[in-house]
Image (tube, rainbow, N blue to C red; front, side, top):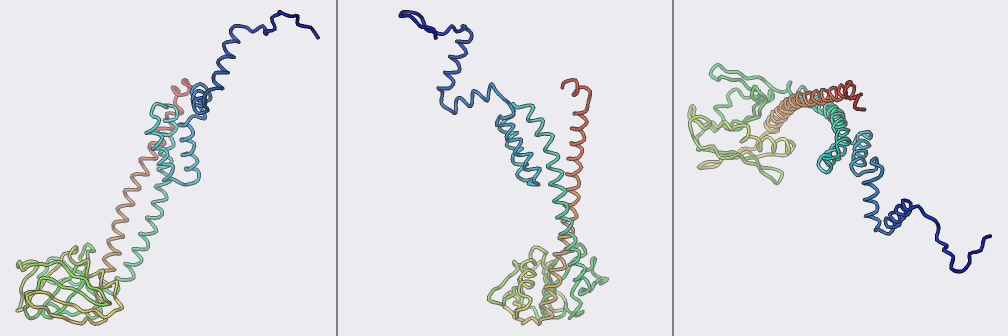
Length: 306
């Protein structure tokens, strides 16, 4: 072992460039951990950047079929890191794949609901009767059981379904009371239509009686109430200058409930058919974008850039 004589310089011989690097490392180690990590991420491995981690989370969500989360993460990536061009390109390539899978799942659910609606409509349709009179421009469906061809000369209420599948009600009073609305009550609850003043069209007079044809929007509360309480005794009240009450028979309640349920099933099936067309268009757009992305990645320019 060599001895160091008094006064001899014992400092290691350090290259000036290595000395500067050592000082930089020591300085970095003395910084707060958050600042040191930020510096390391700026000058180190880009694969662990927040943008790439966010993209990876989106890719993992896509792989696990959580398409809602994957979409939210891609939206966050697009908003938070617009300058990360390479990662943004990966996100743009992943997005149509997410849309495709999410749309296929929605189509499957939509088709199942549409099938159920058609089954319900097919089940109810045999209970209905198609009515078309020469003096009326359009026909309508009514309940076959208890059908009263002289309804317009009686006092009561009739549920109908139009040619396009909309539920509406018609009220009749064979002795004029100037009624403008109707209500149903029973099972501790009630429902009422809006008022329809006499106008000679929706509210009109015929053969000494009076008829009100309520619009589908005005009729919905009555149809819903009759369907909800189809197994309870219900009372119809015609409301006007004076009121008239009628206890509905089970057949009359069933007529309201069946026509309302049939209209709901028809309308639901129609809405779902329109929704399927929209989903198919969305699916095609996503697949077109996937094809463009694939073609771009395989182009000679892209290979040269790599």
